[in-house]
Length: 97
Image 1 (cartoon, rainbow, N blue to C red):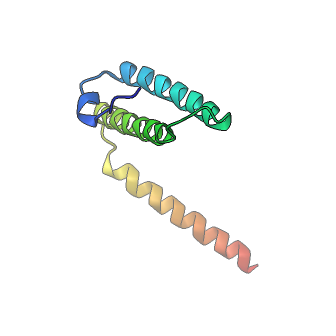
Image 2 (spheres, one colour):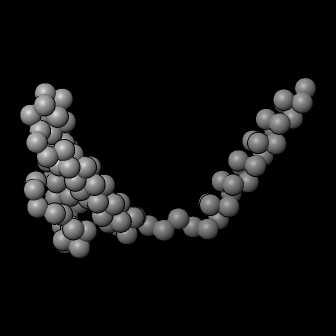
Image 3 (spheres, one colour):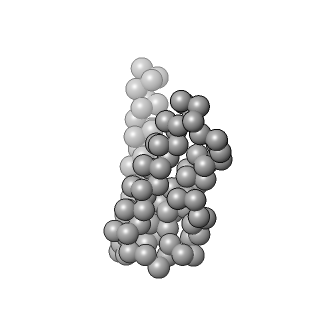
């Protein structure tokens, strides 16, 4: 994929299309890495562009999934931090013994 992929263009795609795009980009990245190892890759910037395009698609996909998921209630987030505090306190008491 030689053309530049922009996040603005990706936001119009469905999650299934984004997943197929990631697959294609990973395949291109693999092929370019194999070419680099065998000294057949002339433009090594293709590897960097492929990695960044994969990250860009993953970011847009995460945004879409986060928007589609229901919001987590505030009660659940505070309860988790209290549990981690109590675990930390119990582990420090165990170290003292």
